[in-house]
Each structure stands twice: as C-alpha cells, then as structure tokens.
Length: 272
Image (cartoon, rainbow, N blue to C red; front, side, top):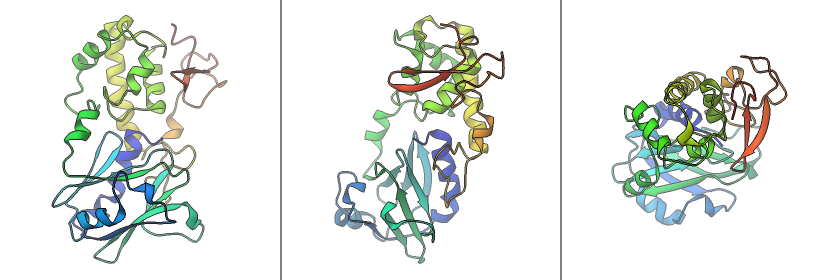
C-alpha cells in the first residue's frame, strides 16, 4: 500500500494539473460504483459539479482536494494510481473512475485490486479524529514520540502502524526506521530507551524526506502519476532484503511476521 512518501509524491505530481481547475463531472468506470465510498455517483456529481479545486494536499494516506464547498478525497489503498490519460498498453477493465475538468482534461483512476476509494467530506473533522500526528509536521516532536511510546505496553511495529498515532507510516518506512534506530520490531514500546527513541524520531523524519525526494518506492506497480516510478527502492536497507546481508554488520536480513505484517530486520543490529 502506498505510504506517506508515495501519496505526497502523487500530490506533488498532480498539483499543477488540478489546482485552479473546475470539475465538470465524475463517473465510475466498468460499473464499479463501490469506488465512491458511501455516496452515489449522482449525488457526488451534484456536490462537486462546477466546483473549483483550489488546493491539493495530503493528510496521512489520503489525497485531498479542497473545493469551494467541501472536500473531494482519494485513498489509493493497495494498487490505486492516477493518470491523465488511458494509454495503449492499459486494459480498460482496470479503471474504476474518472473525473473530467471543464478545461477538457481528465483524471483517471486505475486500480488492479479495486480497493481504492473516492470520498466526499463536507468538512474533514471526522477524518482528523481518525488520524494521528503528521510525522513531518512541527507537532511530531521527540517528546510526542517518547510520551506515546512510554505509555504503551504493545510492540513497536504495530504501534507505528496505527494511523491514529502517527498518520502515513506503513510497512516499508517503519522497517527502515527501526533498522536505523537499532530497535527490534517486537520490542515493547515502554521498554525502548530514550536514546533509541531519539534515533527513531530522527530516522522517521529523515527517511520520509529522502523518500519524497525520490518520489517514493515502486516495488510492484506504484506510480506517482502517469506511469512514472519512485526510485527510493535503491536506498532501502532491510525492507524486501531477506537473506541479503545487512549493510551495517553483514548479518543476513530476516523476515518475520509482526501483527500479521511481513517485517524485515537485522537479528544482530536489532536485538530483542
């Protein structure tokens, strides 16, 4: 599933394309009406038709378009991607929705697994109550992370995956951050030393910033937009590297399951 750097890269890619444009219509494709979450396509069009997109931004893993009245939002889920056109190599069955702008341009939603969703929010207060701290915001301080972890007796990997705690983190960047901080993914949060929490705080911010610079990580089919690719995979240290050597200590990288999520770590650098 695309994480914070991937979603931010999508926003960066389409910002100039969408901001300032007016919506003409939105429709489902291949009769896949489920793509619109809790709203019919007719009702959605009534709400967004002739509205201008004046800001495109990200909250957690949600892409948000601020309109004159309300907010149109997209969650890519596992395989969703946005395109400005349908290419000759595309199969039409993979598309679930499109939006036409009044300037004649289009935004297509391609989604192999069909888990991605479009939302309409009158306001984003309900979304804000579900999502925790943005890790690249000024609110994500070392004190915030230290307090949140010291109050939890659960394991660190599931804690960091909780979107209500820190919004936008997922498997890739959690595994990478824990490796940099030298923390085993099964370590109880309350047992992590202040020194390692300091390292973790720094690692999360630095890794996310670098991943955004590289347009995220393309592993299977993620694209920032129009079939471009994210190049951060070349910088990964442990994620997807099972049985390869740890670049820090040359121990073989292991893969285990933590909270039913595939998890990569170095048994030597990240001792339990």
